[in-house]
Image 1: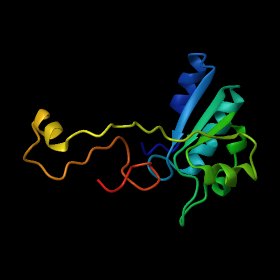
Image 2 (image 1 turned 180 degrees about the vertical axis):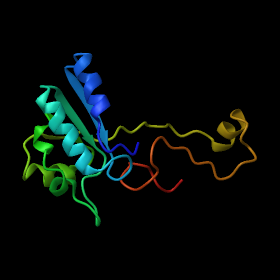
Image 3 (image 1 turned 60 degrees about the vertical axis):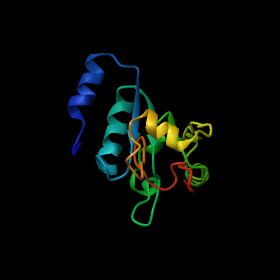
Image 4 (image 1 turned 90 degrees about the horizontal axis):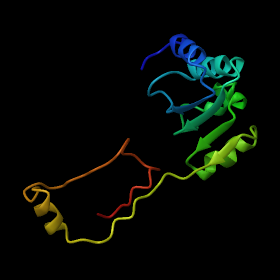
Length: 142
């Protein structure tokens, strides 16, 4: 977190003879697009297979396709939004769409589940894995 470079990580990858790396990138959360750009370049120079997973491609304040010039160095770029795939594929040929998984929960009596979990006195109860924001396939109306 807050890395300005990944020199130590790159050195470890080289010394341990890695053949591939999977990078998860969420804009602004951990490191800059410039840092990602350098990491992609450094890994490509080591002949490392790069799988890049993007959790956001663009918004009102950024556009990763424009700010990260080395995206084409990744062997595959995984996006979770079909619109992101369409947008990025106009400039890149390594983008694949893999929707976020959705776990189906069968209807159960809420009061019984709350009782079984010892949560009868609590309201509301919200559970999530990862960020709790729009475009995460979180059903509404509960």
